[in-house]
Image (cartoon, rainbow, N blue to C red; front, side, top):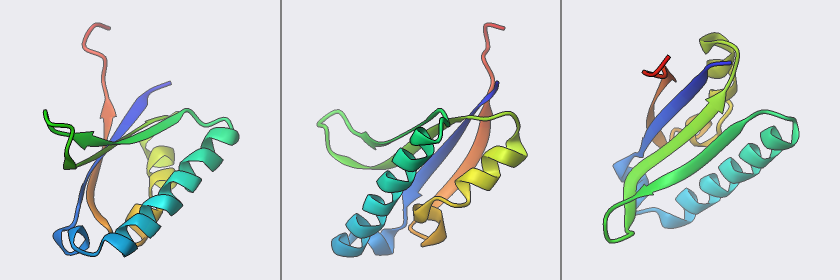
Length: 97
């Protein structure tokens, strides 16, 4: 089954509103755990710089049978539903195959 990657950057207006950002990210984590319990192969995390400082966005990896179904799942992400991030979904293609 193919893998899909959602890249995201938190919108600037949310960088200063830490309480709202934390609340939405907490909902995102609960959503990820729920999908994992349902048997969906999904991972999510944030990116840090060489000093371990966050702020460069996040990455979500999802194994799904096709783009349409991956997009259907991703659109339910609380970070997207609450307009917290600029995001993009792409299929990852293994260059070794």
